Length: 261
Image 1 (cartoon, rainbow, N blue to C red):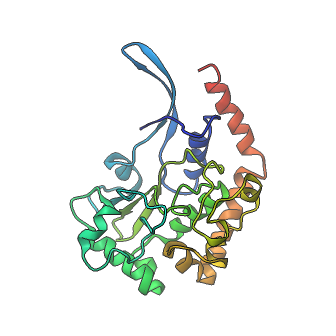
Image 2: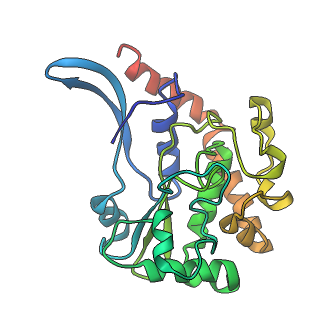
């Protein structure tokens, strides 16, 4: 997938973010390409591996289980979007506007997962790879990647592995590093500044009120053990990529590759 790198004049956000993410969870490969059409150079693009059957096979060893792209058909800036709440109701077809099916079956499995997450969270690890979810939340907060589940509950995929657990897969990281500065947590519902982004509470969705339900965060963070695991994952990402200066060094290496283009 070619990306026009919108709102990222550095051209670094997407490639660097995916490199960091792949250390902790299945995530797309990403690099750069000079794009030509009829021998005419259009320019430099970010090039990101599609989350498709090949990606699923490479990372999960199968690709015929329930698979969804979690982006609403029409993003509602005043709504829940693909937030895994029970809002659509009992009719399974109502979910399809929020969760695009990429498999031939599996909608009932998704609805069961949503039901357990919202109503029987003590058994959620039977239907959801919880540790991977905590890594995703940690990644999104450390990199201030809020054009995600955190902000408007979008830009991720769900794949059910052979153990019957749904796995979340990141997507669309071009607005990481606080290029996107909105979240539905009440304290920052109108947006936050760059200075606020540097100190934003990684438990904002637990310590304050979410305007719209965020069960994938609030219901998991309510468990003290899971909350501590999440904070430990944050510490790991910070120590292995940021406090040691690795992200600066890698950014300069990437910049050297693309500067001429």
